[in-house]
Image: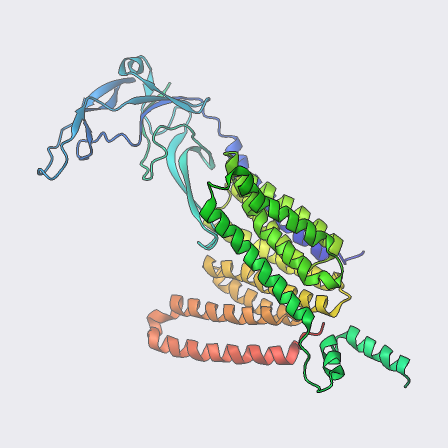
Amino acid sequence: MNTKHTPLIVAIALPVVFVIVLALVVLIPNMSIKPQHDFIYISPNSPGYANDFGTVQYRNTYDLKEDKIVLKPLTLVPTPDKSFPVPVYENAPTIYYYDIEDQASREISLEEAQKLSLQKGPASPDGYTVSYDMNHEGVFEIFGSQDKSAYIISKGNGKKPLMGIVGSDMYYQAELNIIGWIK
Amino acid sequence: MDKTQLLALVQEKINEGVISKEDLAMIASSDGKPVIQTKNLTNIFYIIGGIIAVIGVVILLAQNWTEIGFVGRILSTLGISIVAYVIGFVMTGNVHRVFSQVFLTVSGILAPVGILVLYREFSLDFNSIAQASTAFALLILFMVAYRHNKRNILVLWSMLWMTWGYYSVLGYFSLLTADVAKLATMIIGISYLLLTYYFQHNIQMLDVDERKEKYIVENILYGIGTLLVIVPALFFGGIFDFITLLLVFGAFYLSIYVKSRLMLVVSGVLLISYILKITSKYFVDSIGWPLALIAIGFCVIAIGYGTLYVSRTYIPKAKV
C-alpha cells in the first residue's frame, strides 16, 4: 500500500471529520426541538418595575388567575430625592404575542390577552423553557472573540434560538418575562 | 581532473547544498570578498514596493472612503488583488521568484479586504457562511497557483485560507464554545504538522534559493502547528495538565525527527510556559513565590541549555 499520501489525507480528513462529528453531536438533539405552544410576554427592556427609577414606571404588572391574565398592582416607590428624574407613570407594560411557528412577535391589547387560555411558566405545556443564552465565541481572546447571545427555547439537550423577541437587541439582557403559555 | 569533471563536481555540490552560488561568486570576485548581488537588491525593492503598495491602498481607503465611490473602492482592493494574482501567477521561473511571490502576497492581503468591501457595497452580511465560502474559494485559487508555479509563499497562504474556512464553518454551526474552540485548534494544529510533513517530504525544489525558502516555510509551519496543538492544551486544565507535558516532549522528539529548529525552540518556550503554569497552580501555595521563582529560573536555564544542546547535536544546520 502506498503510504506516501497518508499524511495529506489524514491532515485534510481530520478537521473535516471533527466538524461533521461535532455538528452531529450538537445539531441532532436540536433537530428534535419542535415547540407547539405560543406565549405572551412583556419586552425584556420594559422598565416596568416599581423599584426601577427609570423614565417609565408602571402602576401594574400582569399575573395569572386560574388560566386568565389579570392586572396586578405594583407598589410605587417614590424617588429618594430630587436628584433622581421624575418618572413617567404608565398603566402597564405592552403585551406581545409570540408566534412560535412564524418566530415573530406582535403587540396585543389586554382585552385580547384576556381571551386566551394560559398556563403559567416557566415550562410550556409540552415541557419547553425559554432562557437567555450567552454563547462565548472565539479562541483564547486572540483572534477576536465575541459573545453571541440570544433567547433560546430548550428541552433536554436540544435548543433553538428564538428570533423576533421584542427588545432582544438590548446590550444588557434579562430573563424573558413570559406571562403565560397559550394552552 | 579536467575542467568538465571539475564543473560536474561543483554542480553536484551545488545541488547537494554543500556550496552555494554566493560562494562561487565570492571565489570568482578578484579580492575574495562577498559580492553584492544586484539580484538581492532587486528582490529587496520588490518586497519594499509590495509593502508600500498595500499601505497605499489602506491609506487610500481610510482617507477617501466616500470620495472614491463604489468603483474606486472595488478597484483599489479587489481589482488590485486580481491583477496582482494574475501577475504572480504568470511570472514563472526562478528569475521571477521574489517578484511573483510579492505580487501573490499583495493579492492575498487585498483579496479578503476586497471581498469584504464588495459585501458591504451590496449591504450583505459577511457572516460565517460568506467567510467560509470566501476562504475556500481563495484556498482553491491559491492551490491552483501553487500547482502552476510552486511558489513557497502559496503554501503559507493556503494554510491561512484553510484555517479561516475551518473556523468559519465551525462558527456557522455555532459550534465554537470555549472548549470546542480549544479542541478545534488542536485538531487544525495536527493538520498543520501533517501537511508540513507531507510538504517537506513530497515536494522537491530544484533551485537552491527555492529549497532555502521551502526550508523556512516548513520551519514556520512546524512552529505554528506546534503552538496550535499545545497552547490550547495548556488552557484546558484537569487531565490535560498531564497530557500537555506529553505533548511538549512529543514536540521535542518530533522536532528532531523532522529536523526543525523552530519547532524545537517553540517546544522549549512551551515547556517553560508549562512549568510556570503548573508551579503557579500547584506549588506556589506550598513553597511560596520566591522559592518557586528560583526553581523556575533554574528550569528555564536548563531548558535553554538543553534546547541548544539538542539543536546542535541532533538538528544539523539547514541543509537545503
